[in-house]
Length: 343
Image (cartoon, rainbow, N blue to C red; front, side):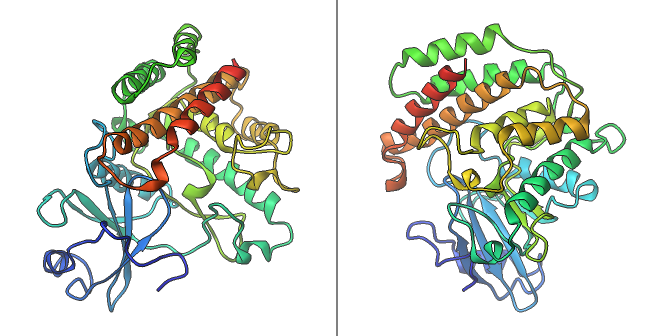
């Protein structure tokens, strides 16, 4: 068992016989598979496939019914295939399977990379670097800057999205997701939706947008934690307003002045960049105007509330029995309150 994998969770097993038969002529050593699971994440399921020749990662969507257009593994595969040649932190992909009879869902196979992933605690191998908070903070921002600097016109990546009207469509689309997933009426949410509609900013020039760029979706180089070995979870990546990525970062990135319990606390420890330092470095390296960044942070909090509501509604309807999701409705209320407070 690898340090970052675990035995496959009950109910999330893959049909090893069917998968082995299918992959035997599609990947190196595919006729002999050992399967483990990466335990992180609340939605898509990610597995380690170990063969005598090498290791691979298999990605598939969650079990049970999912929201329309969510967890689109075929699209994530196509995004990675297009972006990897021009942005090395995007893992290489090898095979897409759209035949759901193999394991019960669309899936794809990509390369396994090795490094440090920071989730709910600082791993010992990262803590061994005395200046890791500043190094990781700087590498984190610089990686986003590098992603946003990829020339989408020159490399033919504009077709990954529809840049014109991107932000307006995003706002409207997330409103619709909320309406489909909500389990109760929340007056503050209606106020939030109205504010986001009324204060829509003019977007800067479009770039690649990861749409889920956060610390636990990055893999750090184990020898140099200031270098990003891989950026993970590309299912929502597109082309559009780059400040959407920055707003999401502000939504997740904690600092000592935050009230308790609103954000993950790791980056509140001494040495990590503050949110203003993150913004300052991004502005310095890109030259972009961040005077309206508050809008993007509010929008990010709203989106995160909708994502958690989409997960919660599956539990509420009995479509999943995963006890981790039982109290997600309380987290949704908390995020809405944070967003309204920012307004």
